[in-house]
Image: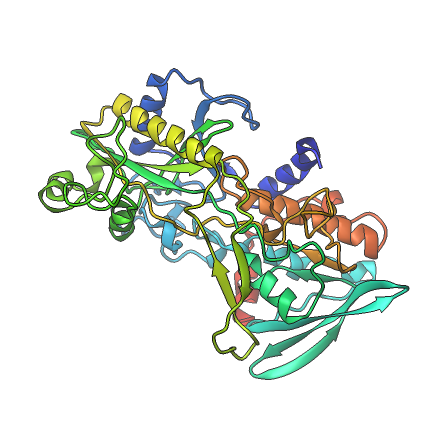
Length: 466
């Protein structure tokens, strides 16, 4: 498909979540100051064609009332405060503001955005049946049989509370992710004619660069990431503020050893201070002498190639109650030359940005392999030779079987985080599924997006045990 064809689905997801320009504070101001010294323009359109910097967008609810204006916990209570309160703990999920219903937490999970649409959709007035959600259920097998000479999905077997059930269906959608989808496929003895089921497990090939500042940066405050720089086709940079424990993790996950102790055969040098590596001892004390509020961290997100050697297989370890378990083989150090060049380019740009922002010291950690923001393993493509899913989202080997998550994505997407693209692609796949197997015009594009801000939704979800 073309990018232009995806734009309406991106826009639909953005309106549904809703996606807005993230709230910003001191750390974003410092980051943008550094981006300006690189001679980059501000990106004012949604599509990025050239190197540029811009505010980041996300689905975290905007600060309202007293949120973002005070540190007084008595004032950061719903409904005095709404949306992001700048507490700095977005990565672990968010239960702020205190006292807010779950669908008014600043950072809402999918069961507060997309799931309520299934619960409240007007399907029954159109001849359909109400949707039933079943928690703690696990599909163990997808059933398929030859119909008119074509292998076709017919339903699933699933377990809940130790009891097996069989469900017949006209369409089956697999949404188990990059690891569980291949596992279910293999455990179901479904065909894999071109060998691409389970292959291509791909991520961003991250790195971490941070600067130490004399002035206050507000590093851990507010939304985790509200500012970014894009460098097509190399990747991108995100300003990321972390709470203490995650900041410690990010600063120690090195593939270059410990600075001043051993280099592990790497110890890359560049526009950062000394060789890359983990900061320890007196140097770490100096870095943290003013606290996290004097650091500024940059996540390097590499535009990477599909890694065909990465894959999911069935493990030789004992099966669990749901069948043979998956084994992930992730040969992250066997990157393509292009991927390696992209990472070095963006890491250097991160250091230059921090210098330009006023950092007195800049450190590159040279992150070790980290499986995060994964995609593919059931990749979509235009060719039968190297894809599992066709451009409509239906698997090539089994008709009536669709892939509805990020395992259908084919690569690292040029540096952006993959969530919105996954949601847009799945929305498009849902439309194709409806049109192909149900008939008529799907409601999803003809109806106004549903934003789940009704407090009654949280009651429904609570009663369902979600």
